[in-house]
Amino acid sequence: MDERRRGRKQQKRASTSTEEVSSIEWEVIKTTEQEEDLIYRMYKLVGNRWDLIAGRIPGRTPEEIERFWIMRHGDTFADKRNERDDDRRS
Image (cartoon, rainbow, N blue to C red; front, side, top):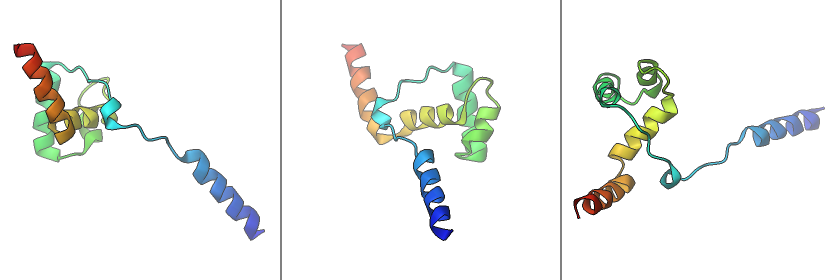
């Protein structure tokens, strides 16, 4: 009987695992100026509690807010932003 339970638990673990996606493959999240301002202000108040921040912005999920924040403040994306800005200036 214990073997059957272990087998079920292993099956559950295998079925709930999610495939990871590289952050480099993320699409840019388009936000309005008001949304960006609210995200920055809320981040100062509550930190990285993305669910609370997303609850203040209709139609946004916590995952979108976190991705927006990482893309704006992450080192990996900073290099890409700088390259894009340099291309626009040329």
